[in-house]
Length: 173
Image (spheres, rainbow, N blue to C red):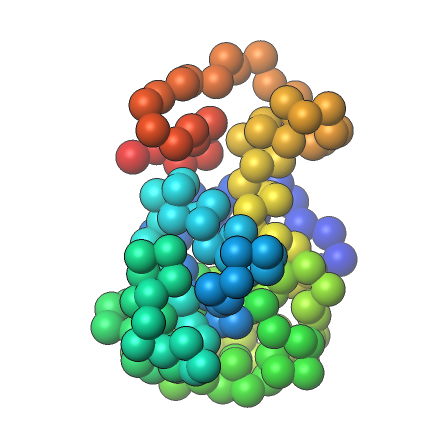
């Protein structure tokens, strides 16, 4: 697969299909990007499992934090990687040891490891590299366009406003 450019349908399909997300490298520090992404995904209705060995047994945003992917008590649909590219092969090893296998490995902005991605894809796991699910969700749902940013998505669909947090189109509860 070409990991330099992703079709909107590929990204949207992933964001629609996954329900549980393990965030490797999640932080309890509220100024870290992994904290923002964790909060955003929780607010959009995903079940999120923070993974951080230094914070294991404590909560991040009301979610129990685990030391390892293998410690998560239920199947994981997507593993979101907030670690350096050099850490990705070991994370893919951990992912491939899970049963059942997650559907997706998503590597955050600046994170890319083509060899590890090829190993995961050979096992039937979808891979996204150098992208942020928070940004992609907001872009595809039109939220970014509200801030004057060209999201490359044109829609005449009026957003549906609901109580509580706002979800504008790509996930329906």
